[in-house]
Structure formats: structure tokens, C-alpha cells
Image (tube, rainbow, N blue to C red; front, side, top):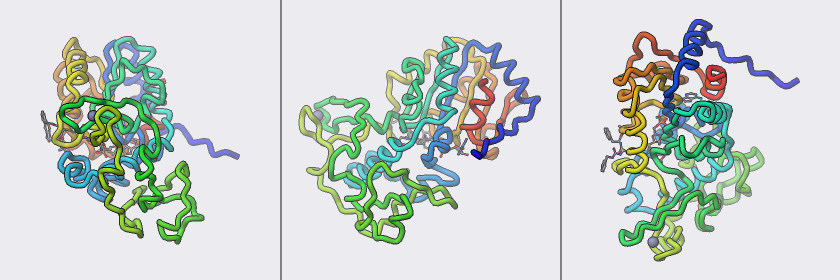
Length: 319
Ligand code: BV8
Ligand code: ZN
């Protein structure tokens, strides 16, 4: 008999006061982080299962890293594109998309580049991707401003085919024990996360990850220049048009309710929207696995903290 997951344990009083406020709220802002996609099998950046921990990806998500070794950075992003394409949006992504459809004045700002909110049919004009998308590309040639949107080819170029490049996709047991090169991993097999940490570790590829030449990497269809992933790297400004739209909406008039879902709120200026909304009088509802991720931002009386998996909590509280 299929195991029915019991609804999450949400204290009834919190749920009641939250639902009352939700029904009364006209202007709602949702800020999403990697935690909302954890249940879809995509590792978060920090904390348990954090990407950034396993091989310090923060140093890979920078213009300097790309400058120095575009092949390695492209392999990191090709691997994440592959994993994100294998993943599916979960109930939290769908519940938010539904709430956004139901509420005229509701916008979602997402730090996630995994494409899962768009795939959950979130209304596009009310979803703002602050850090870009794994599936966009940009030309690095300063005189060319080619941007490619929603390119889901996987791998984006043959040289970035994960098994060939020796990045070990932890996959079905039949590959266990074979060297990465000998693995017959077929792209499309669900990458499995080691139970313990949930980490998807590419650092243990037996074969050295070959240094790919720029000639092997994605090329601009307009000027043949080198393409880069269309994400915002550390030290880069967030997309101006997106920021202007979001700033105008947040400062336009009082935000009644802000949902802060699955984020450690450590990355700026995205995290700054929590402070801006609160300064404008918003009440905050944080949904997170980990209560001590409220560091530096203690909740005020009248706010809510719902502890648990966003995929279980969000559909429950937005009912
Ligand atoms: C910039 C794309 C300036 C790439 C990413 C103050 C002001 C401005 C900037 C700064 C500042 N202080 C520091 C900075 C610099 C920097 C920064 O914020 N550094 C941090 C590390 C301190 N900011 C920048 O560099 C930004 N640029 O400011 O430019 C500028 C201006 C003008 C001109 C020139 C320059 C750019 C930041 C964007 C970086 N790009 N992503 C890629 O993905 O590869 S950020 C990256 O971190 C991801 O987008 C990710 O979404 C984001 C934030 O992480 P989270 O989503 O929160 O994920 P995390 O793992 O941290 O947390 C997961 C949470 O979920 C945890 O709380 C966990 O408990 C919880 N959880 C886990 N499982 C579940 C769960 N919750 C619920 N359910 C579960 N199942
Ligand atoms: Zn170009």
C-alpha cells in the first residue's frame, strides 16, 4: 500500500492566524531559495547537501573562474542543467503558481536558476528570476549582445556530455564500482544523492575532468564568440530591468504578507527584500527546514515560522 505522507505538523494556532492574514492580504511577495527545490532532488547551496560545500562552487560561480577555466565552469553548469532537467517541480512550486494566479497583486522573486518555477506554470509576468537561469546563455563578446533564452538542449554541446567529460553522475546501482569512464550512465538517469548528506559529488570522478578547449565550448550563433551561462555570478549586478520592476512593486505600496521560502537569506541584494518589505509593514512567514537560518533576522511578534520541507508545508498553508 502506498505510504501516504501525513500532512506536516503545523501548530493549529499558527496555521489559523496565518490563513486569516493570507485571506485578508491583497499584496503578497514570495522570495524563493534553493530549499524549495530540495524535494525535487536538487541540492541546496549551503547546509546539509550543500553544493557549495562539496566543491566550493561559490568559487566557480564567478566571472574570474570562467575567465580562468571556462571549460570547468561550463562542466559545472552543464551538470546542473542536466540535473535540473531530470528534476520535476514539486507541490510547493505548483501551489505558489496557483496562488499567484488567484491573487492579482502577488509577485514571486526567485534566487533559483533551476527553471522549476517556470515549469510549474507560474504566471511569467509575476515571476522574477533575480539570478537568471541555467537555461539562458549570453555572449561574452563585449561588442555582441546576443542572449539565448530557454535553451534546454542537454548537453548544450557534445563536449559537455557529462559521462564523456568524466564527471561521475551518481546514478543507478548497476554503475556502482565501475570507473566513471566505464560508466554507461545514460543521460536522463536520475542522479542519486548519497543518502547521508544528499550531496551530489562530482569531486570523486575517477578520471580527471579534462581541460576542455574553448573550441569545444558553446559558441555564439551571431559572432562565434564564447557563450557563458545566463546566470548572475557573485560580484555581478542583478538584471537591472528585473530589479527596477521588483523595486517599483515592493515600494509601490504596502506589502501585506511576505513568504520567505527555502532560503538562508545570506545572498544580497536578494535578501534585502525581506528588510524592505518588513520596513513597509509586511508580516513575514518563513518556511525553512532549519530554524537557525533566521540568523541576523529574528522574526518579530506577528510573524510566522513554519519548520519543515517546503514541498509539504507550502501547499498546506496556502490551501
Ligand atoms: C552583487 C546564480 C554588486 C549562480 C547566485 C551586500 C549588498 C550587495 C552585495 C553583497 C552584499 N554582501 C555581499 C555581497 C556580495 C554577494 C553576496 O551576497 N555574497 C554572500 C555569499 C554574502 N552578492 C553578489 O555578489 C551579488 N551581486 O551584489 O553585485 C554589484 C552591483 C553593481 C555593479 C557590480 C556589482 C550577486 C549574487 C548572486 C550570485 N548568484 N546564483 C549559480 O546558481 O550558480 S547565488 C546562489 O545563492 C543561488 O542563486 C542561491 O539561490 C543563492 C542563495 O542561496 P539559497 O537559495 O538561500 O540557498 P542556500 O543553500 O543558501 O539555503 C537553502 C535554504 O533552504 C537553507 O536555509 C536550508 O535550511 C533551507 N532548506 C533546505 N532544504 C529545505 C529547506 N527549506 C525548506 N524545505 C526544504 N526541503
Ligand atoms: Zn556574440
